[in-house]
Length: 177
Image 1 (tube, rainbow, N blue to C red):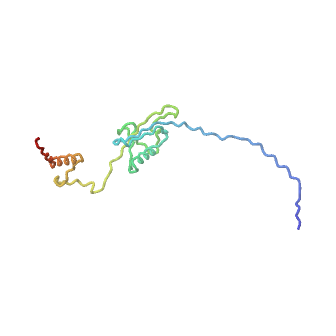
Image 2 (image 1 turned 120 degrees about the vertical axis):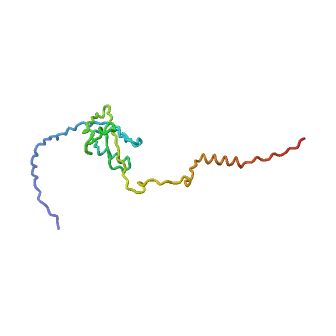
């Protein structure tokens, strides 16, 4: 069996392509981002205060409340925010979707000095339904409670006891020469 030979013919020239015209897409002009330094402080417990040195004013109140909840280990349910001072007049009544910019806080560009904002927060009192915790303490006879003695008092008592039981050794009598 031999090889088949195909027809060999001339190729037709390709049709000319239309000229390419490039139109760049319209670039969206973004608003500048403004920053503030936020100090978040609790009403009672100073060791739970924290600070963000540079935060965009577009951060929501929900994000601030979530960071407070994380700071408390997730046990906090309700958080009340106050702007600038801890007073009912400074209480923030806006929704959690509101931003710092919605509160009227004006920031600065990242290049310049950044203004500071203080946000206080307070937590509602913990409600307990446990009957053991809610029951009043019962009276105990002080004679039945052992006295609490510190380590120093124990050492002093042991030293006094040792002085009472210590007796000097009799001296050896020497013979006059």
